[in-house]
Length: 607
Image (tube, rainbow, N blue to C red; front, side, top):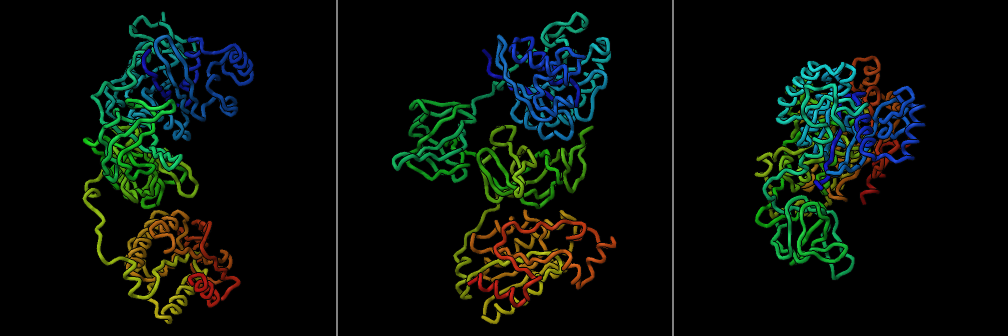
């Protein structure tokens, strides 16, 4: 039997995706009597076939889906035919659920793109095709559905086929197999249709049965991302993972990427015992000799074929977040088993869904496709997505909500990143701080405008200098006169404002100074990014707390009044949000405490 084929069904809403897979399951005798009885009952309540069994309900499992007659989540279903086994992902068609569709496409070998013969190619058809192409789906099948509703008209089919091939060729999809079908009746799906004597090809299911799940490519070098370091006792240390390329045997020389440490495979351990070899797709535990340092996220590779590691990349990205992608905002990036901090450093362009043209963009909105420059906070081993799905596909995760906000594929590393290395010097941050007889720190004051940050920061620096401490004060207004004079107050500019200041503060701490940062810094993710640049005990987040009402009453610059009159846009606390610190190291309530009392609390905490 041929290898399992993973198929994603996609297209616009109500094109018949769920009906198609329901029909295949029914005709292949994959529906039990109990399931059929439930479908008949649900068809009378939710069905669209006038009381007749609605086979789409086999896939639309959520109650909301059945009530609305749409697919919301990705529904997976496995089934067998005499020739092979399938895993089918029924992806939602609504634009708002594009992120769910991308989930199904990310692991698919083939995509069946559904088009309603009465409607033709729609924007969502093009969007889904671009997404499956981005995720490396090799086989594209166009199913022109509901042909029975256009009297099986050959011209209608030919017109849609030609329009779709134009889209596919522009994207770079050279091979498309097209089928005129009726998912409802199964014509040209599971059986030949008497109404299409002009169509001489196979049925859609027969075509899928004959597809190759894996390309017959030349042998790939061995790669295994480490998922888990298994050390049940002092006498055993193994590295668990799933082999994503090549094969391996005891005695094979290997390297651990990104460190490049050389070792040899000592044994291949599985739950039944040990094995003489393992290959792509096998989940194994490897032991090495000598016992070198290996961590989760490292990749064990063939010694003669090392894997590249980089910290800056060109990538394609599908943005899945409700809030726009902002350049410079910190996210978490998950690539194979590795998770690191990451930022998008540049949006090179957005892709027009209709014609594929490259559009200038400063941000990506929900469901936008774009090409970006991406930076991680440390080098990670990878392969271009075109070479390896497993080592080149990534997701971006929001630091605050843990929601997946982007899915992407690495095209290549940026050469300048590979050429820029950290240079070690003899004089360290500790040496510089010892010369000043102090402990270098970053004291990050955050709060609304007029909460008292600048007043507290000024008094705090005066106190530290009186004790012969070496300090520097970075104030939000002052920095905008020079370093950040090119930035406005949009969300993107605010993110870049904090990124620059955080990097400057890090350099000042490296110089041995106590640096006081007094910035509104309204977003938790940016404050978390600033913290991530420092060692654990070098950074203190100090929340200078006062309500919007109190700050507006103080209003020494008259900014709140101007913002409420609409004279100032994107003003924090009025028409731009302030995210209160979740777990500040110190909270200063300036409604109850004087500036001097606030400084005393800070000094007590520093001691």
